[in-house]
Amino acid sequence: MILDEINVAIWFGLADEKDVLEIMDNKPENLELILTGRYASPALIDKADLVTEMKCIKHYYEKGTESRLGIEF
Image (cartoon, rainbow, N blue to C red):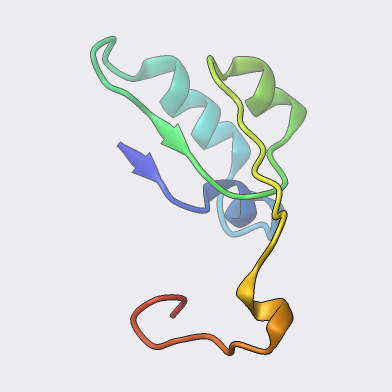
């Protein structure tokens, strides 16, 4: 199950961190749970089995390419 951009939703106050922590605690053992987005709290990071941070090295936006329909939005 993917909770896409849930960390950002928590950061903006649109979702409750306690609810997400409860989901993590009570998920079936055979369920893979993926939380995405910036601003993951220390509590979520601590509870996670795997934490990855992506860092942009090079992006075509820097050369003036605008967002494209169907790709970025």
